Length: 241
View (tube, rainbow, N blue to C red):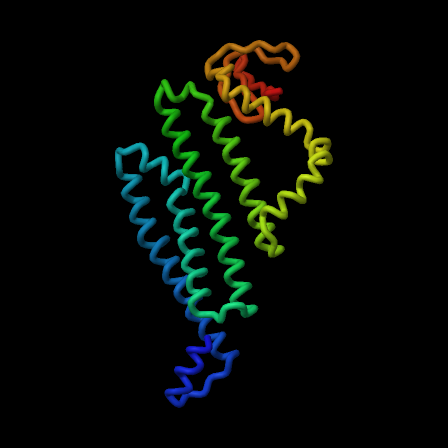
C-alpha cells in the first residue's frame, strides 16, 4: 500500500492511506468477481454441458457431486489471499482480516472438495460388483470425520491466533467430559470402524435381529448405523454397537 501511495505521489497525485485502501479493496473485489464469472459462468458451465452429453460415467458423477465447483471456490480463496499479501501492508489490520477470511474460506472449501472426491470414488466403486461389496462408505465416513475434526482445530487455532498443538493439548483435559457426553456416538463410531475394517458384514447379507425388528438383507453400511430392508420391504436402522 505504501508503494501505491509513493507511486501516485511521484506522479503528482495526492492520495490518502484511506483512499489507497479503498482502491486496493476495489481491485481485489473486481479481480474476485472476474475470476468467479470466468470459472463458474464459462469454464464450469462448459464442463457441465460436456458431462451431460458424454457417455463417460465418471464425468457425470463428478458433476453430480460438484467436485470442480468446490475446487473453483478453493482457488478463488487462494487468489484473494495472494492479493491481500501482495497489495496490503503486512501486519496491518486490513491485511489480517482479509487474509484470515481468505484462509478460512480456503480451508472450508478444500475440505468440501476432499469430501466430494471421496463421494465420487464411492459412487464409482458402487458401479463395480467387486468394489461394491467393500465397506467403503463406513471407511469414507470415518475419514470425513477425522478430516472435519482436523480442519475444525485449524480454524479455531487461526481465529484465536494460537498454535494447533496448544489447542490439542487443551482438549486433552476435556477428554473425560467428552467421553461422558458423547458416549453413544463414540461407541457407534468405534464399532462402525471395526465392522468396516474387519469386513464382518457385506451388502446383501441376511441379518436377523428381533430386538430391532430387523429381518432382511443389508442395503447400507454406515459408520454408526446399518440399514436393513426387511422381507416386507420396510427399512430398519440398527446402530453398529
